[in-house]
Amino acid sequence: MKHTEVFMQLVNKILRLYRDNNLHAGDVLPKDKLSGLIQALPLEEKAQLRDSWHVLIGNGILQDGDPRGPILTVKGEQLVYNEE
Image (cartoon, rainbow, N blue to C red; front, side, top):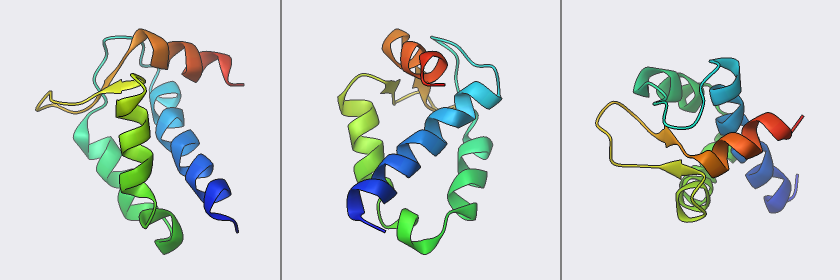
């Protein structure tokens, strides 16, 4: 699988966690949910995790820094719920 395909699959999996947990702008994704996803990732995707995370934070889709976990932004909510 191409680097770009793996990268996009991982970004979509992270965003799907917010949708699957019915989280919206301003909501925090508990760290245990994110950790569960990370542990279940194939090795190929784990290698892309850091880059995917930086894209989500850098583009204002997620906000980092809350000790409870990453926060979905308004921009992120639009992407999560219009992605289908």
